[in-house]
Length: 135
Image (cartoon, rainbow, N blue to C red; front, side, top):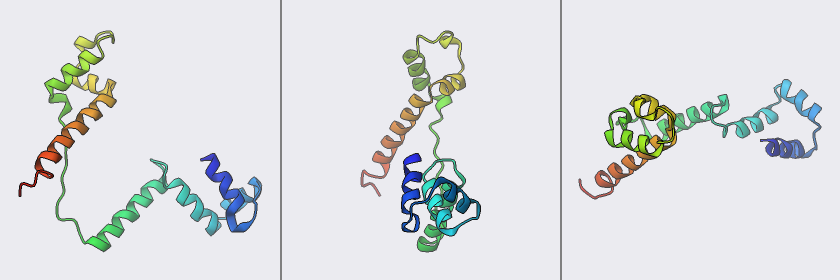
C-alpha cells in the first residue's frame, strides 16, 4: 500500500506531489486522485472500494450475460461431518480440553483445516459431476 501511494505521488499528472499536496487534492475530491485511490483500494478486501468494484463487476455481468438463471449455495456441513470432527481432534490433540469441545468450537478453533476440508469436498464433487462428461 505504501509503495503504491508513493508511486502515485510521483506519477499523478506527470508531477511529483508532496504529501501535503496529495492530502489537499484528496480532501478537495480531485477526480484524478480519487480515481487512482479507488483503483488502489479496490484490491483491499473489506474496503468500501473493494465492494463497489464487486458491485460494478456484477452489473457488468448482468448487462453482458443477462440475468442469472441458476443459484447454487454450497455448504460442507462441517458441524455434522464426523470424519472432519475426528480429524480436527486428532490434529489438535495438544489443545487442552479438545475432547470435550463441541463441533462448532472445533471448527472455530481451526478454520484453516475446515476450509481445506471444504475445498477438498468441493473439488471432488465438481470433478465427479461437472468434469466427468456425464450429461
